[in-house]
Each structure stands twice: as structure tokens, then as C-alpha cells.
Image 1 (cartoon, rainbow, N blue to C red):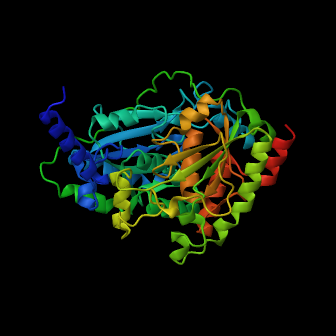
Image 2: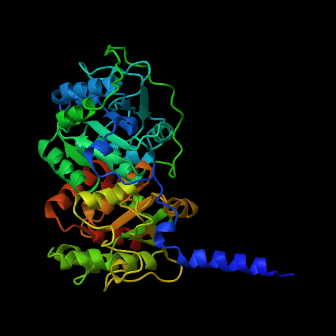
Image 3: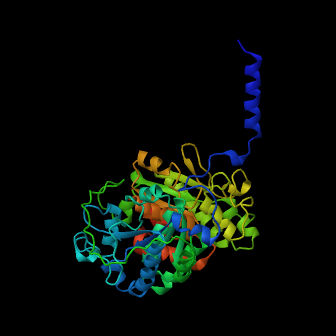
Amino acid sequence: MITVKYIICCVLVMSLLMSSTAYAAEPAPGPNNGLLTKSGEILDPKHTALLIVDMQNDFAHQPGAEIVPNINRLITSARLNGVLVVYVGLVHSLTTDSPSYMARYAKRGLDPKNLLVQEGTVKTDWVPGLLRPLPTEQVVYKYGYDAFQDTKLGAFLRNRGIRSLVITGANTNLCVESTAFRAFAEGYYVTLPEDGVASYDRAVHRIALENMSKYVADTTPSQQIIELWNMIPNKIYQENVFYPTRTVPPIPARIGPVGGILVDLDKVVKPEHTALLVVDMQDDFVGVEGRTAASGTNVQPVQQTIPVINSLIRSARENGVDVIYVKLEHSVVTDSPNYMARYSRRGLSPGNLLVKSGTPGADFVEGLLKPIDGERTVIKYGYDAFTNTDLQALLKNRGIKSLVVTGVNTNLCVQATVLRAFAEGYYTVVPKDAVASTDAELHAYALNNFDRFFSLIPPAADVMKAWSTK
């Protein structure tokens, strides 16, 4: 029997639901909630970790020697002020390197039996002069460029309540950048000491720093970080002692989404194991009347990709290649705190977002072929198409080994997605005329980095030819 009391309770519940705003939704996933915008908040020792990345014999002699004193000063200050210190090293072996990784060796003419930082050799030792890990400090060994992929780093940082990472080491445009992009995608605030990272190529180092400082990290001299940490009371002193390098623990064989080594383009993009990703081809980014164009930015370079991507979509459909569209959507309930902090520091308002959910700016750009029945659209909430989406499950369920990645912007969402895909073990192909950026220098930088370390970058015509001759 329905009572008056029951009816009143239902009315109250409905009133609460109807009056709730978007702010009542579940907060964005991340290591912690709450928006940090000031340097003192972001780098507070109680929730900050210092990462020392790949300062090993095979990497750091040439580019890293000059930054060793700066990193040592950061380590010393971190230990004095209770900042968590984590050493990250790369280890290669024939049992842990993914097939897509080994295919890159073959393309570059490298011998898989004579690898850099090879397991069980002195190549993996920390570079001379670097302060060694204390017995209480963590050493994380990774098997690719990204320090989070297939390691315990993420769980360790979460368990210690870490929200912010100061990332140092080598090389700026490879393992440092891969780790910084992944850390940002995982919700961490990222700071890069500009004199605490280095690369074999100073020009590439400069452009990589510029790209990261625009989108995922604050950059500052190491001395400013040290001075900030030294201002914090209740310092915790730890004596700086040189310890012998730890022995690399046994590493289990890697299990990834692929098997066998594919090198040639026609084998990499075979239709039965390939998907075409169309990334962020949305009005606010590409459209002549979108927000990017309205800001005065020249969108002609990104507009030029539309007919090329359409040709790839038609060819994919004709030859049985899966087509997956990827869209970025922003809102105050899905953007993580570290993402919103980037708006604040760039003078942008969270209420005035690009590709805002539910607005025309988030729609696919005019002229782009739209998804047809059976094709999926993956909605992402950051730069990387894998984080907090169902893309990984979708690819695994379809037996995908290779991704042909198209779209915008080459140096941001395309790059973040390619780096993550490669870390996950996928072969990546970036048709060089099917990606673009509004910044010509950053576009060229990203393409060159893909070609050297991550992807094949043929013209779209070569990809379509390989599909049509399956």
C-alpha cells in the first residue's frame, strides 16, 4: 500500500535529482581530486615525487653528463625535504621487448642481440657520478619508453598519495616525453627541470621541451624547485651515500597484443589485423568557423588533411579495415584537475572550453566522412585515446595488431595516442599527409620523432596501395 510518507520521500528524491548540476557528477579519475595551480601547491613535498629516468651508461654519457650535477642537487634537496625519490631504468632483452619494438630495431638496421641497456650487462648501470639510490628508495625497471607501461610505478605512486611528478633524465624527446605524456594522462601534475633533462640533439631537446610546456608540464630551472622545497619546514634529512647499483630482477616474458615481428608496410597494415583511427577531426580544431580558426590561428594545414583522411576511410571500408573515430570532449565533470590547472595557467576559463560536450564545436568537421553503421566512435577526455576509454578492449576484441593513426594535432593528441599505442605493443603507422598541426615546427618535430622511434610514416597512398593488394 502506498502511503503519504512514501510519496513525500519520492518527491524529495526527484527534487534533489532534478536540482543537481553537472558539478554533482562523479569527479574525473586521477590520483587525487582538487585543483592545484600555484607552484608551491603543485610541488608540496608531501605529495610530490622526483623521477630520475634512464640515467644509465648507454644513454646518459653523451647527453646526460652535463645534467648529472643538477639532478644530484635535486636528489639531495628531495631527500632533505621528504620528497619521494624514484629511479627509473630501461632494460632490453629478447624476452621482454615487444615485437613492435623489435621491428623498430630491424628498420634501423640494429642487431637485436646487441641491444642498448641489455639485461645483465654494465650498460644498465647508473651513469658515473650520479647519486645512487638509498636502500629505502624505489628502483623501477621498464621495458619500453613509458615508465608506467607494464611496471609497478603507477601503483606505487598511488599508494604513496603522490599527485605531482618532477621528471628528470634522458632523453627529453623519447623516454622523458613518453613518461610525461602518460603521467599527465593518468592525472598527475608534471614539472620538468629544464636543466635536468637532456637529449642527444639539442634542437630536438628544445622542441620537445616547448611541446611539453605548452600542453602537459611546467618547465622551470632546477634551482627554483630546490628553493621552493627548501622553504618547507620540518625537513627530513637523509645522508647522501653512494650505493652499488642494484641487480636487475628477473623479468617475465612480455605478453602483448601482438605476436611475431612485422617490418614491411604491407605486412604491418594487413587488413585483417589493422584499424584506422581518425583522431579529433572536430569543428573546434579543424573547422573554418571553429574556435581555433576564430582565435586567428591558420587552420589551412589541418583542413588539408580532410580529403586525404576521407580517401583512407573509403579504402579501409572497401578492404575490410576497421575504422574507429576518436573524439575529444571537454566538460567540468570529466576533465581531471591537472588538466583544468593547465587552463588556469594559460588564462583559459573552464567554462569556455574547446570541443565542449554537447556543443557544435565537438562535432565532426564539415566535409569529413562520418561513421557508418558498425563503426565505433570512442569519446576521450584528454590527449591520449586509450586512457579512460574502451579503445583497448575494442582493439583486443577485434584482434588488432596495427594502428594507422590520422588526424590532429600531430604534436598533441596524435602523438599522445601513438606513444601510448606503441607502449601497449601495437605497430603504429602515421601517414604523413593525413596528420597535421597548426604549428609547422612542432608538426615536423613529431613526425621526425615518430619515424625514428615509433612508427612508419609513409604517404597515405602507400597505405591504400598495401590494402588494395591484400
